[in-house]
Image (cartoon, rainbow, N blue to C red):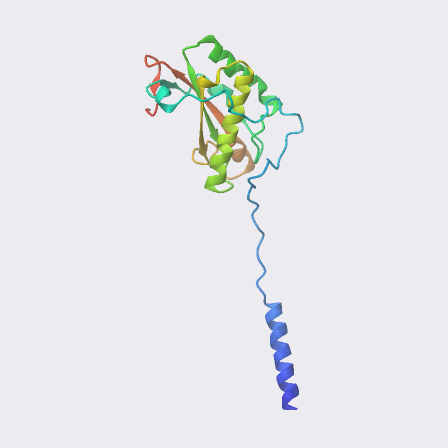
Length: 192
């Protein structure tokens, strides 16, 4: 009888432990480092960048140039979640940036890649760089020399959308174009 009571107690404890097992909450999806998960329904008019024969200018070459953030602010391009593919709808903005660079051969360009707040710091830095690189590659395909275009990633550090909803996140997934003039131009690089 005592043995049956011990077995019954052991089975009851095992069932209680199994019933009280920790059930994890909903898992948050983090973007992978593989190819973009979200694809545009239209073909990408500008494939991802390849450096090859198109090296970027060095930071020493652009140091001292004057940054003009207003000149191309209207041409900011936006991206789908977890993607560096430039959407066909953004082609006019890329073409306008190319036209501005062609109109003044003394200028250079800095492309700043940005992300929304989801994902790790490292992932967003890499995605921001891929986004800036995609825009750079698009400009090269439109006849802009690679030695006039430098890229920089801010990851999720410079949000423009104030909230944590999809509308704000969509504003934050962007490339901004900063026109760089020779030293007698606008605001100095790194200055205000």
